Image 1 (cartoon, rainbow, N blue to C red):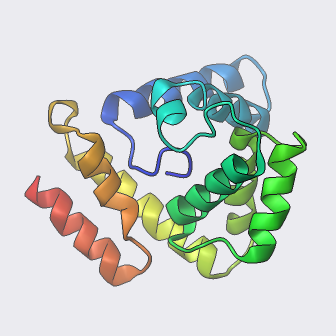
Image 2: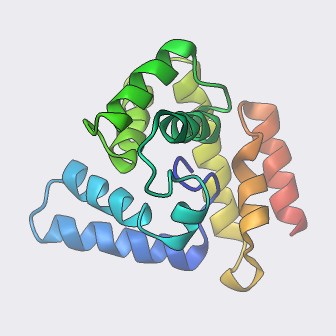
Length: 166
């Protein structure tokens, strides 16, 4: 959701879940394994051609990435402070795009606030989508619509009804 702005496709979810489980089974810490997988996602053509900075390290590219992640994860614009902090972290290479998304998710999940609630509604919408839509019916546009405007109980139900119509 955070990187690609969409629910997963069934085959992709299975692949990345298997990768995560394999890394953990090899003894890797789950947080480090998750960072590795998100990094691998940022190397895919979908990320590079979509939400990623495309290898650009300038301020405007970093701000675009920060803005996209806040919309994808929390259905809101990044505050000026968020934009300033995270774009500096990216341009100064203190964090990568993949590390940033993990940190945003972990930060939201550790707080009982609106961002954590929105993220949970989006997670539920994505889980519902991937459980109901077979790989043969998957499309990036429907997967994006499944999570795009989800931010509360009502919009979650709207997403589920739209998924059921697929």
